[in-house]
Amino acid sequence: MSSPTISLPLTDLEKKARNHGLISSIAFLIFLPLGVLVARYVRTFSNGWWFAHWITNFIISGPLIFAGWALGHQTTSQSFTGGHFKDRHQKIGLALLILYLVQLFLGAFIHFVRTPSIFIVHRPPQNYFHAILGIAILALAAYQVHYGLYTEWAFVTGNLHPVPMSAKHAWLALIIVFWALYGLGLAFLPRQYKQEKEGLLLQQDKKETEGRTA
Image (cartoon, rainbow, N blue to C red; front, side, top):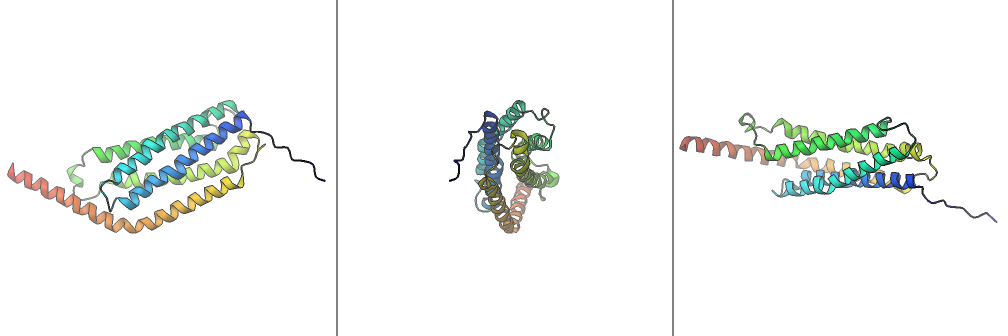
């Protein structure tokens, strides 16, 4: 007869590390990708896409990102890992927070600041940078969560309670689903660029008309 298995409860450090990983993963692997997919799919069919994009990536994702980052900072403070921003996971976490703030500022700038006349018939370069930076953030976040699941958890907690395989499978599923949907959404790019060009030409015609009547 086999002896009963004793299951020890999570320590306070493990609970804080778990909550940090869970909240950060929800922000970076669910809501931020959802906001990107809204922009990729909805913008060619509705002018209200930006509001949904803003709500998802700022109002919802923002508090989760800051809460997850704060929990990570507290976890490091309670662990014996050599201090803050010493290992790869900690440095990438700081980089992700900074990049997220830069992306927020850039998105607001693109939306609220009037485009210079030199770009009136061409897509402004900041629009391309915003899209590229968004994808870079998601790719880096995917690596960061993977590193947390496979390396950082054991390093910080001692791996008394290993990360369950269900969490690793969930990571893989979220990555596959997002990149598959994003890849399919690229089919809307020609339609998007056509609509943007038509809109810019209308702005140019309006400006020329106003100039003649002034």
